[in-house]
Image 1 (tube, helix red, strand yellow):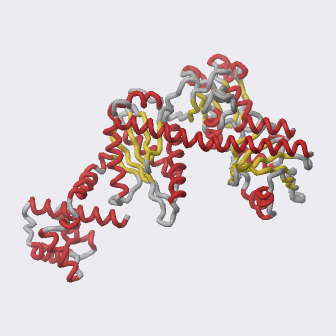
Image 2 (cartoon, rainbow, N blue to C red):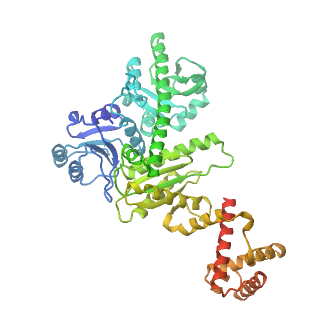
Image 3 (tube, rainbow, N blue to C red):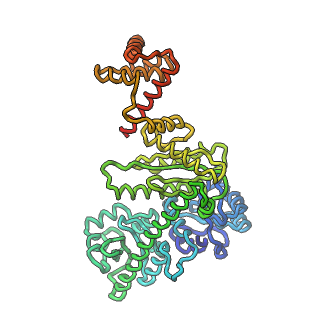
Length: 531
């Protein structure tokens, strides 16, 4: 957590601009970052900072409603010209209005705000700057060099930046707005061998601008942890710096390296803690009540969702693990945008999410949220999400988790060609999978179906498929023959032949049920092998 004043201090002049409101007095800690949805207004935590994506009209009314619900700020896409009504509403309800720079991504703003609001105190118990506060480190380096500074990872993604970025060239502006160095600029640096020079040297490297490019010169140094390159620090300078400032930047790179290592360790530690707490909460055992409270959940109705993804056969185990972590983190952020108290964590190879929902159509709402997530991710891993039953309170999370796992298992078995499934919709398939587990491999098929399958194998026939089509069509030959693309007379002949070969009385209800169950179990096992 942090105050609105600090958010403006770190992101102001580049991304956020005050429009109206008494900002210096906004020293309350921001309780959370929430996206405004006029069609389905989300529940707000105390002292929320609200992102008004697409919000333009009726700003005074929105400010009044948010102020009544305890929000401290509203961010809308700039430019915004405040009228008297907006200024008065902002003053009366204590909600500061901020303009978000055009061209910048709401997703990137959300990520930066979550980083800044993660901890209220920038120092830990030992007096060291916390690992997440790279913005403060960037500003400190900028003061040492008297130059705007960015800190980037190995993939040229922006991790933090200092103030005074408005003084720099278009490439730096695009980097700040997009949280990523422009691809064309990165390609040019690679072709000129700039990155190789930076990675080979343990001292700052001066990068001259391209002729007639309009870019300013840069100074860059690699951030190292032992032999590993973690990222780079970039400063915009007019000319090479002296030895004293070069030494200062070298020492600063060590500090940034510690921060990046701590950040990685903090993220892994946070993941493990959240996974342990969520696992305990989902067990509904003796320690679940305390775990629920530590996760910030309330005793309310909620639904459990289970997500996993199958890695490609050629993918290395380490890469698959990293992909699952990224997918789980994205899932957690997506659920948090849907509800401020939603929580998610990776447990084993499955990411579980608990989504508080008090609506009468909770399961359909959960399906919609899951579908939207899959549409946004578009991952090559083809993620699958099982949605459990609505739990009446948090003590019933174990049953909802079991239902979500069963729905997910149906999807993983390849029985259905879809990526999201509600448990109530796949209950029968889940029961058949459990039944398939109980039947030994050698015992399936048996009896009449075994004789029909053997005949098909010896004579290259398809009597078993014919019988299954007839059973699936509830005995309607017209529908069944159309499904197999054969003439009804041909279908009737094959059906009679299947009954003769198997010695099965198709007029017997029990015989039909036994045949249908065996054929479905065989199909499930075949789908499981293919998937």
